[in-house]
Each structure stands twice: as structure tokens, then as C-alpha cells.
Amino acid sequence: MFNNRRNRLILVLVMAAAFAAGLTKLFLLRFEAGDVYPVYSSLRSDPIGTQALYESLKSVTGTTVQRNFKPLDQLDFFPDQTVIICGFSPRFIRRMRTREWENTMDSLFNRGGRLVMAFRTSKADSEYSKKEKDNCAADKDKADESQDASKSSSGDELADIEKKWRGHDDIGFHILRGSGENKESWAITSKAEMPFKIPPMLLWRSTLHFELKADAWKTVYQLDGKPVIAYRAWGAGVIVLVADSYLFSNEAMLKHRFPDFLAWIFASHHRVVFDEFQKGLTKQPGIAGLAIKYRLQGVFAAIVLITVLIVWQQSTVFVPNAANGSDRDDDARTGVGGNTTEGLVRLMQQNIRSCDLIKTCFDIWKASPAANRSSREKIERIREIVNGSQSQKPAQLYRHICQQLKQGKIL
Image (cartoon, rainbow, N blue to C red; front, side):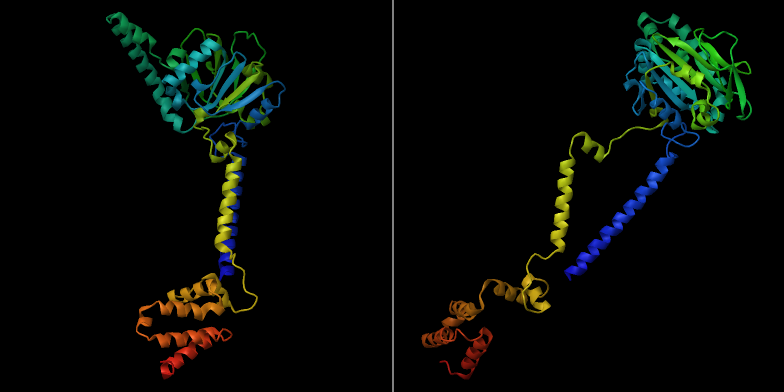
């Protein structure tokens, strides 16, 4: 019986281990390709990922490369650091009006560094780009109205209006999408001479372009007379806008690589951060990560060991089997099966020796109400039979006493 239970338990454990191994292998295959991550993520190794650029920069001596999975306002900025956001969708540009981005731009302004925002296009961006021109005009009207209202406001109200963060409007740009579908073309450098070495042309696959609303912006590349790559100083830092993330993709690293352009983007900085938070990726440490962090490996090992011992105890018989006897005798010793009477019998078998069984029964019977109805001579006669027949088997002696009482030989 216990062998069957043990075999079933082993079978269940083997099946669970096989299922877990298969599931783990499936996830490893998905994560190895990286297609579970957003486009232009540094965790993707397929053509629309940026893992090749990440690994290449990581192999450069003296360069520290890392991924960011937390809000940008929690990221430390340094003068020799480049933070790059690839695959930034135009639909999410209004997120820059949040307090997170305001704090981020303040850190960049005060502490320095370089922030590179590379955008992408998708089918979902089409409707947004059609409305963006109208939104730009509407935003301009609202700004004019706020200025008119500020003229008639008190000094405190005027200060509140001036302090309000307006995201990309304060930075001074809008992103628009031209007509037509994405196709390969060439973006060329602007007419102004650049103080740095860059390729004269870049392969371009996007129809996005920028509308620059501040004189501080300098156009680096343009397509059909519209700026597609631009930069500006922002306090102690620099902001770079790129209207196509393809230039940083794994496919571009293989087919259309422009080293001089990448060298200008990262500005020979020793720190490079690939932002993943804006793509919706956050780092949430699991139980294993927390255990490693707080050095709880020994606790988990002890829990596993105790669990194994409990399972082993439930499936293993620790009472040794008798040298001789049937399976029924083994069950009787281990207390398996049977009703209440059999349980009492087994209890007596485990605690009363065979030679003392009849004597114990006599002592119990003598103290019972049934013995009070018997004469003293009868009780003494039974005592003599019990004491004088120690060598006789208990069952035979019990039947002999019962027979003597039935025949009236014991009065």
C-alpha cells in the first residue's frame, strides 16, 4: 500500500518537474529572441531591437552601459552621461507635461549630460499626426489667451502661470508626420557647417519631422527641407531629437551603420543609459531576487529540506516489519485499516506481553461490576487456573476458562 502511494507521489513529482522544465524552455526561447519586449528595446535581439548597439557600447573600454527601468526623475544625471530613449512614440509626447518630465528636465538643466529622444512611427500614430497640426494651433491660441489673462491677473496668479510646465512646448518643438508611407530615402546635413564630424547623408525610413519653435535649436539633418535631427543646449545639458529610431536598431548595425553619427550622438561619454521605462518596462524583483538581495538563500534551502522530509515521512513507514508474519500482521503493527475493535486489539498487542494477557484480562474483569455478582470461591478458582497455566497459549487458556464456566465446573 505504501509502495503504491510512494510510486504515485514520485510520478506526480516527475510530471511536475517535466512540465516546469518545458515551460521554462519555452520562456527562454521567447526571451532569447526578445520578441516579448517592445520595439527598439535594448533587450531585443531581432532586427527591430537595439541590443546590438547596447552590447557594442558595453564592450568599449572605459564605458559604463546600463538599462533604466525606473522613472527618469529618479535617474541621476552626470555631465559625462548620455541617456537615450529609442522608439518614443509621438502619441506619448504629451506625457512630457507631467511632473516626472519637469523634474527630469530640471536635473538635465542643472547637472548636465545629454538626453537623446529617438522617435518611431506606427499605424497607431497616423491619426495622431493628422491631429497634431490642429493641436499645435490650438495650443498657440491657448497660450495667447493665457498671456492676455495674465495681464489682468494679480502678481501671485501671474507667477503660477509662468511656472506651469508645458512639456515639449517649453522645450520648443513639435513632431509631425508627413504625407505618404515610410520608404527609404536620404537625409542630408543642413547648410550650416557643423563643428563636429558627421556623415553627409543618412539612410532615412520615416516620414516624421520636427517643427522647431526656439532659436536655440540647431538642425543637423533635414529631409525635403524639414528638420529630422536637431539639438539644443539646455542649461548645462544638451537635448538631441532624432525622428527615426531605425539608425539605432540591430538591422541598421548590420546593414547601414554610421559610426561617425553614433560617435556624435554619444559624445564620447563614459556613461550610457538605455531607457526602458518609457516603453512600459519596469523592474519588479521577484522572490528569488529579494532572497539574493537580503541573503536568505539558507532560509529557502531549509524550507525545501523540511518540505522534503515531511513528504518523506508521510510516504515512508518507520516501524520495522517483523521477521515472520503476513502482510496483515504488518498492517496490524502499523495501525493501518480495521475498525475500533481491531484497533484496541492492536493496541494491546503493542503494549501487553502475550504471557501477561490473560492475567491482565482477569484483573480488569475482577474490577468490573460482573465480578461483583460472582462468589469469592469462583473468583479464587479462576485465579488458580490463570496462575497455574502460564505456559499455555492465551487464546487456548481463555477458551478453557469459558468452557469451564459454561459447564458449571467453576462454581
